[in-house]
Image (cartoon, rainbow, N blue to C red; front, side, top):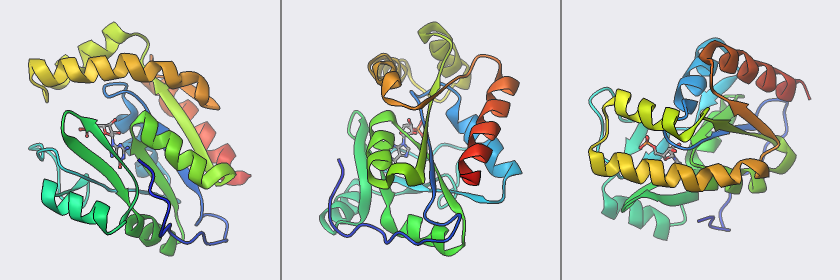
Length: 202
Ligand code: 5GP
């Protein structure tokens, strides 16, 4: 979903107004790539999404996500507070609050997004050539399934939902200018750094 009104204002200095979007099926390793970029590049700040799924033990409210109740999320949809939002997995909503983007731009930084494939394409459409959109691809569906098992954050049912959605999302690969195959992690991290550096120099 991509509400049309009340978009954040687009500032015009070099880094603010810029957006870097990493999209991938769950389990492709994009969060690892995003965390790596944030740890080495202080020109970037993470867009903390809002979501309605349960908080995991290692997650912090306001850092990993803003964990909202379904009612709160729905109220914010009605108030047009989201740049985009999706019902990503069976009944759970995830979305980007416009205030989050304004917060990061006001720091003079570029916004780094970790979102699902449809959300990423919507954000790319909105920001146009002010945005870099990268599709992170697992070497295979089997590898992705193995990573999700290894992560141990899912039940059999939610793991199956994530794998099914991944198979659907892999079809979108050709809509992205940049596809990053996450086979050997070190190489994927290096390639991600290169793409970001090139984009921020433009
Ligand atoms: P997880 O539950 O594993 O943290 O995230 C599930 C999926 O939702 C991931 O693919 C993640 O990138 C995506 N996601 C996180 N935040 C957003 C958001 O703000 N908008 C959209 N469309 N997807 C999001």
